[in-house]
Length: 214
Image 1 (cartoon, rainbow, N blue to C red):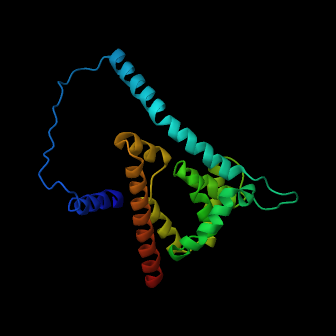
Image 2 (cartoon, rainbow, N blue to C red):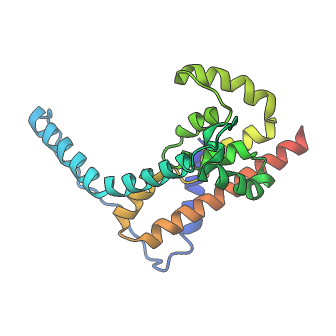
Image 3 (cartoon, helix red, strand yellow):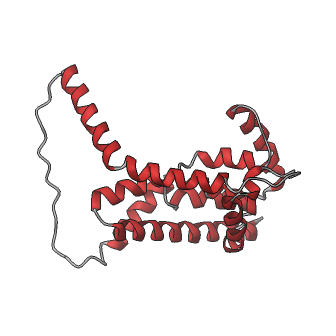
């Protein structure tokens, strides 16, 4: 609901910044409704999947490899006791980002999880489990993670993280689709920057308002 409302607000604001102030009525020609043919549906699905993989898959694959490299290298030193991700480039980036995200209540564990979380939002949960040195199946890690973060995170931090993920850039596949549809790296970068900024402001307001009320 927050995402839908914010999208309407942002669209209303951006309307006043566009150069072309003329009306652009939305006109759609609806096709005749018929019982779908299984062969036509299969061909359509195959064509759309092929187009997606050929146009967007290259970008997703490249960014995924980069994220994997950041989360894997360098290897932990001999005698290391912390999770391997702590010693990786992703861990270094996460600890550096802690200074940027401290005003919105994010600790270094959350900052590290944000890096592999770029691949997909749900990956952030697994990344948190890795940072907290949890192991097992996905359900087992989630059950162990819940009481752990409940004990270590404040309510303000939890709500701030939720607000961040309402507005922040979705994932690399979303950014790749923006690049494909617009044909512009500049538009993709601008979309990513404004969503990240909007997410930061929302998380900042949520964090400090919660602190004031608690």
